[in-house]
Length: 173
Image (cartoon, rainbow, N blue to C red; front, side, top):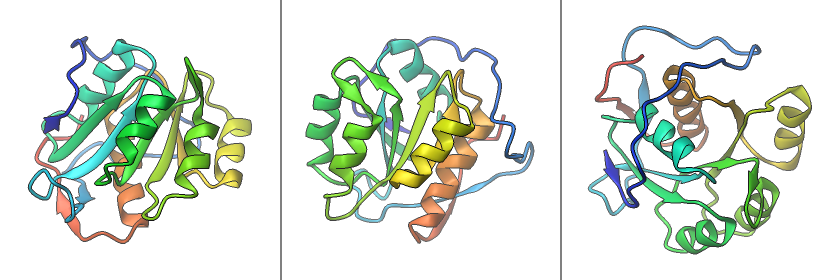
């Protein structure tokens, strides 16, 4: 895993998951690769988290996986990083210091190669999930993050984009 922006490392806290989906708990899932990525074929994920703790939790969930994580903590920083391309999935907090996930989605809907948007929230419920999907987002992740859920949702987003399959290098949680 390559991390473009290093954030303080904090251990991942055990947490809940959305009740509407079941995720595999064993075996090695596959993930699509972003062949255009500048990190030697690594898959590009933009993680937009307002806190270092949430950023570290996502890094832990995707740790050891062949991905290139680019970190941002504000909408402005995220939009600047998206302009460079090479991002296939954006995981974004529902609320940021200078905007919301809707601001990121508005930008993505005008982008040429549109990454999938996954919204992360401590208040993940059916209303938010419905709103995200109806406006063009991909899915919602509940906080605190669970590695198996994060990997499954990111993998599914990759498959949605029609990328070629690629195996995770890390064991599932």
